[in-house]
Length: 207
Image 1 (tube, rainbow, N blue to C red):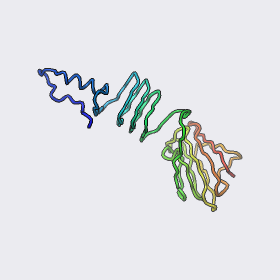
Image 2 (cartoon, helix red, strand yellow):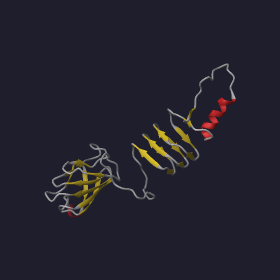
Image 3 (tube, rainbow, N blue to C red):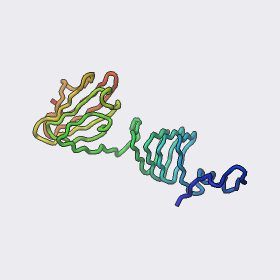
Image 4 (cartoon, rainbow, N blue to C red):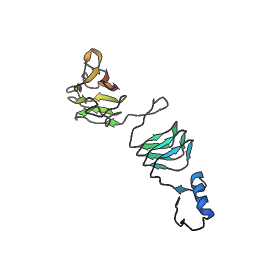
């Protein structure tokens, strides 16, 4: 079990013992395993090397690299040059150019008969939808959606057509202004390319 970094027994007038100093050094140099809880921000000007799991509740900013031989879990933002870990879990968004990401898979959403909206919540999904399903594309003032978000849509049903409907102030670019999938086993990719004005590209098997 890991030790806990503590200030107990350190009070004014008491002698500072060697253990009080060494526990701080041991905790941060990895000589001993310590559980450390930070309630504020952590700013490091050099690399961060971690041999145990890292659970983060607040923001961390690193001007160097993060290297971990275990898992990193975060409910806030981590900013660094490079992050390497066994597993990175986040309840927030990952951002970057994606040039070094491999074997990345879109999660499958089987919204077979449910209308859906192009939003941050739905971004990155591979939608397997039946016919007569509407994908709603709204302005950023109504629905939060970051530039660069993508949606893949595949029609599973032979009845009806998946249709893309835009709200006020939204521009949808598609060949010949087509906005419907042609039928069963047709597919399309929808991508938001800019804000102010809200502009989207739609490519695929459309009519």
